[in-house]
Structure formats: structure tokens, C-alpha cells
Amino acid sequence: MKRLGSWLWNRILSPGSFLAGAAVFTLAFAVVALAGWREHTTFLSGTAITVQAEYASSVLRGILYLLAYFGAVLIAPILVLGAGIFALLSRRKKAPDSVG
Image 1 (tube, rainbow, N blue to C red):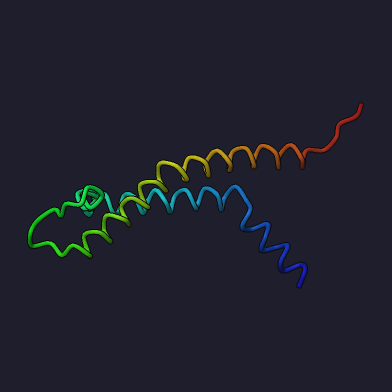
Image 2: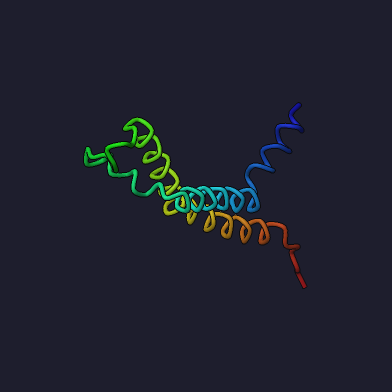
């Protein structure tokens, strides 16, 4: 059981998984941006986008857009930098000692 936990932990904390997470956040933002949900963020000022739009669904779309935006702008770059630093540190750790 301890081996399984260690294997799983090493899979989750790897440069590849960090890059995959960054890609998911970026892809989520691309989807909601292409869907045109940016205009639904007007709920922050208390206005609806149109009279016919249902306010609850507009608020939900606005919140999802904001979450995707902050994920792409704040979290994804941190994950990419973390993946680079983690890859460099793991490469340095695995390098054989050359004593001559």
C-alpha cells in the first residue's frame, strides 16, 4: 500500500502533471471565452446582459468565466514555472557525481 501511495504521489507531483494542469486551465478559459461568456461578468455591477436573459444562469456563467480566467492568468503560469523548476531540480538530483 505504501508503494502505491508513493507511486501515485510521484505521478501527481511531476513536471508533466503540472504542465497538464496548466493546459487544462488554459483550455477551460479558451472554451468559455469562445462561448462568449465574458459579457456575463456584468453581474459584478448588478446588471444583467439583456432583459430576456435569466439572471441566475447569467451569474453562473459569469462565475465560471471568472474562475477560468483566474485559473488561466494566475494558476497556469505558476504551474508552468513550477514544472520548469521541478524538472531542473530533479535533473540535477539524478545527475551522477563525477569525481575525477
